[in-house]
Length: 397
Ligand SMILES: Cc1ncc(COP(=O)(O)O)c(C=O)c1O
Image (tube, rainbow, N blue to C red; front, side, top):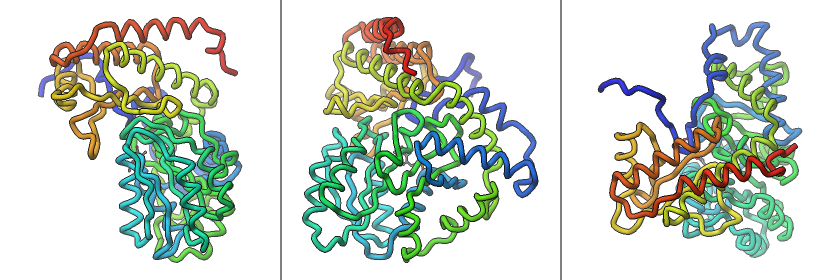
């Protein structure tokens, strides 16, 4: 391996680039997590997290990747054999579904072609068919990171209500939280699952459950075995800012700083920034003459764009060309999309020039790898960035 000068472009849809302020915050001496400094910091973090989840309910922090928070959501609320309704929007929804099966839950699946989000009408009709009310939870991935599709979480809530069904509502926001508008309370979500390594601009290693009162009530009678993931002990210890077992001390320093940064920028500005970069990226893809995987414009993701390769061209070969020539990592195609698509991550600590570099790298890579495309994607994106920087709508309160 030889040294490569300049910054590596990490443009996968998470883990994302960790800003210097967060790196510096993590780079501190570890303190006693049961000592006097730690509790007050945790209480500030828990408060700051509630603002990001847009909730007044408790948020629980696990020293784990997002997969752990998926498991925590299921084992705290459900019992062996319970029916759960899951929307198979892509690779991550499929993994959550497989986990539910392994835990002994009976999964009912609403399949899709992986080019659209969860279908509220299909959820409503499945729930209406369940006269015995034996479905205990509806699970949706808000932003499917394998496809670049954002499901309409509020519309699915309305569908559950229209069916008059008491099922818990669980939503995975691992690649949307702190990037795409998400409202745990207003949208009536019972368990929100999230992770540290995307919109929160941290390294991987923390994950979260925001939990409604209804979910906490369900946890009192839920029978799936749980110990490490148990909410009860977490909530009891968190009251004073402590944890039942060793928390990821230095990642929490980073989270404390990241929450300050999000607060300084203002969540509506964070959402508007992601929307603007996503739109510029889509304009680039269209100008290249390539196709966006998401087939429903109102469900376009603001955190990543998945691009379909022209027939006969391998996405991973293009990704390798771009990595070798320009030191940029793009997301690979996952599951049934392997080799067929590549994913451009435009989330987290990101700005106009970072997007410019990313799109220039893709356009040069397409040419270098001999992938049929038109020139001008970068220009189309630049035009949007310039126009939207001038527009008054850029100044979102
Ligand atoms: C939407 C979504 N859900 C779940 C996961 C799994 O999280 P982790 O890999 O942190 O365990 C990911 C990972 O990228 C994801 O994007």
